[in-house]
Image (cartoon, rainbow, N blue to C red; front, side):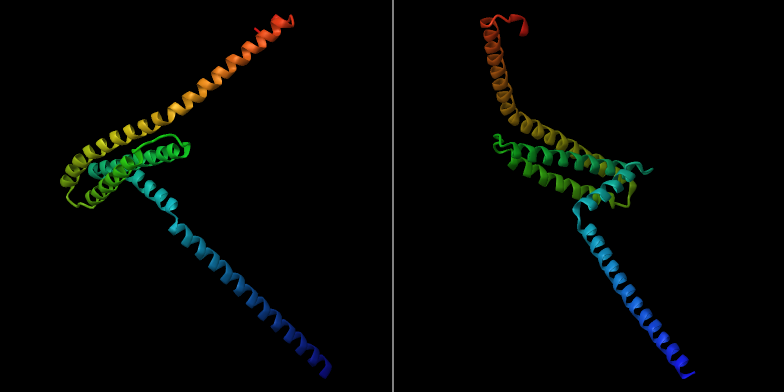
Length: 199
């Protein structure tokens, strides 16, 4: 009898140790998972790309709002953002190509400051509680956004034209090289009596 109680006690101790070990293991795994989740969420919140995507989604939704003032301001903010992003991409591409771009980056910085000022004005107009004033502000700022878009397009056009001479030179060089090679092959064909191989 005492042996049976001893075996039962050992079995109970073993079960208790397994439960404690399993509980500690689950706790450690849970804490690790919680920490990993927290780090991912923190990184996503700090990520500018995620915030910009979320902001663009909100503006896109507002651009279909029933309120005319809200709708117009959201569309102006989207237009402003698209124009600025296109200008930044063109500037990066021009700088990466190594071609001459002169003082265009300085002009671009002036435009980016104007973009930020317009964005701030649109945000203030967006929070305006008076609907009529909101519509008036949207009309006035809309003219400035349109001017900004025109200037940005002119800058992008200038950046692309500044990069074109390099491409045109390369095309001319390739054309000259190709013409020379065709002439050599035709001369070779005539010399060796196979004129029908090169048309």
